[in-house]
Image (cartoon, rainbow, N blue to C red; front, side):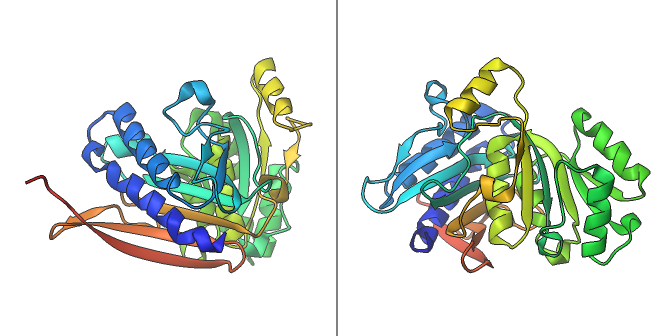
Length: 315
């Protein structure tokens, strides 16, 4: 997987640059399509046998990178891929912060294979690894994380997406004295942020998309933290799809190793607009300047990469 790290960086950089004409445009379909098409072209040039195991939907929802899609030249290692061509489509087309292009990959059979559906997620940084339990009362998790991080519960900072479905979590956390910080978009960013000591984020909690959950789980594993999750099937069809994909207990807890079961994994993200740890794309002196992070599970080392792409204009 490490040998593919720079190739995956090129994938996210190319997809991010493809969104430039659509930043602030209000056109979600065009922005998503541009990023997806750029990703697909780049992925299909890579020496690998890749399969999207969790993404934006099924084959009938193309042109999105769909679950089960085969990518790469057909030669090289077999790779599981989790992908979101634009994490934060709304902020992208509104010219707001917290938009990235993001991809995660691992050795074949290592990533959760699940439908595009809702998932409850709980993430913490390295100090609290092994101390959380998604099935335990929230109060118990808060106390455990506080002890692990050498804090009082009242000193904890918990990040939650600003959605009506999270009101019960928000009220309960604040009732115990912990601080809730709300964000609008980009839960992959905030899950990974729990593992960055300078950000002072103690816990990430919320209900969002399963693809973003697996992407976040890879980032958190690469950075030494822990994520747990639970799929939230809404109907019999989603239950059936889970079982078809090999999930025998669709409503049971998913421990970190069930989300990503190998240290042979990588996470790459490129900023479209500014966010808490990446700069958005800048245009300067005839160049598009991208800012990305790369991490891999074997080294657990975070790298920041700035790249310059010359803007070619038609003569």
